[in-house]
Every structure is written in C-alpha cells, then in structure tokens.
Image (cartoon, rainbow, N blue to C red; front, top):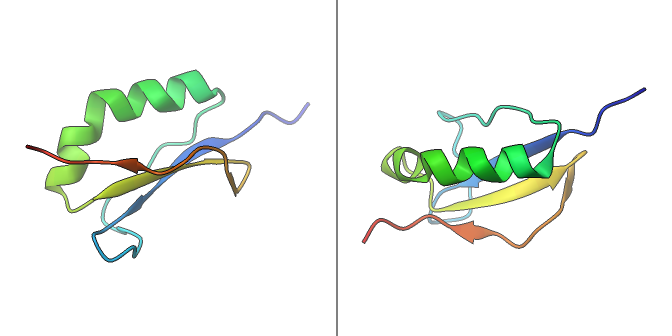
Length: 69
C-alpha cells in the first residue's frame, strides 16, 4: 500500500521557494496542519511568507500567509 504524502512548500515574499527550510513529509493532512501551526513563527523568521500544502505533489489547499505582527 502506498501512503499519501503531505508536505508544505514555503515561499518568500516574492513567491520563490524558501530552500533553507524544508517541511517534513506527513502521512495525514491533520499532522501536516498541526506541524505548521506549531512552527509557523519559526518559519516566518527564516524568511517564509506563505505556505502551500501539497498532497502527493498537487496543491491541496489555498496558500496560508505566515505573518508575525
């Protein structure tokens, strides 16, 4: 059985991928969303302005803005 793959692609303010931070790969959407909820401040501090959730390589949800106010 092939397990589904969920992972975040992180983009900077210009829409370019942030390469210094890599998302883990998750087997459930819930786990992926929980991870982002726990780490978004660190990701924003590392230059990520938005996160896109991919499911098996296809964007599954709208982009999420990562803003520290």
